[in-house]
Length: 474
Image 1: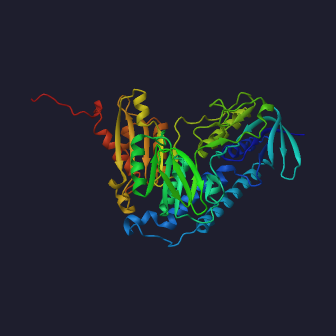
Image 2: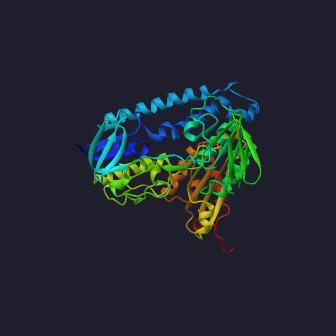
């Protein structure tokens, strides 16, 4: 039986980061993945494919230029499924190649097959050909991610009624699309296909959506996607989905019906832990297959077994999974490491993009913090005019007591890039004065930070050192 310092189950962002970190520490590490191509959900069906698809859609559709040349403007008149897939497959091949090179360079062993615990320190791997190998591990890291939730009431057929994994392999772009579930995945795909001029209906049983995002931002976002043609149906629970051969028919509990050529069911994901044999390791999951961990070390209830990424739940981001994997590997291998920073950015790659860092206005209110708000609209910036941006907003929250930045929310072009300025200022405990004092490149969208900073600064109490002295007349 081969013995390892660290055995990692899953090769997504969390498993990848942990493996490379362990390799750099010159420890014996093994990565097991049930597929022969490494990268996990993030590379093959999640983060990378959906973001590649988004960029392809925006480029081929000419979306970014339509404010200048009209809504009918297109870079390519007829856009087919093959056009979307070509760039997608090129990107995925590149990602897998880079990952395999990183594993080789850092002397990480790899194994393909289905992994399951046979004891707390032993993992059995069953290859596709039935061959079984057992390995022993001083420490184990579970980074298996999630899989799509597929309720029995939905008649999935792989062609017109799809989950988010199957959606990427569509044979043709539909003229109309129903998306069930206004979570991150549903919102991203709904707005992408709306940019292709597909008639999209987005159905969400709750009265609200993306509740962790600042409400002002959601109001702005909702207005824009409806203007872009998305039919957003909130508070509309699905009663029945029917496959009618030529179309899909959805009956809603409120009595309305929706018809489209294709339906994407994107209402939730489950932790991919069912086949791990967790009972042999002494572990249990919640009702959604997720593991509970110590959020500082990422240890499970069994101290030598760790878990990171989507399998532990919120925030379920590739970016945070990378950090979690590094921290977990260092802790497991008794190596001091810099802790994770308290503020991290959240990005939603919809059309338009949404990105946030820090507190929302609702959170500051719930905590009883006195605050001021600064707002800038992209159309107020010269770069916004040059780019033809009609929408886009940056919002900053400042503490009235300390003047420090509490949170930043952005909706619009480049939001997921711009947010890193906010992240830096938040983590360095910067104040409103930073945005007033500093010069930003002109013309840039980043200048919106200065506009929003001045907007709040002009309404906040004047600092003592800036007050004008009022001497007595001589």
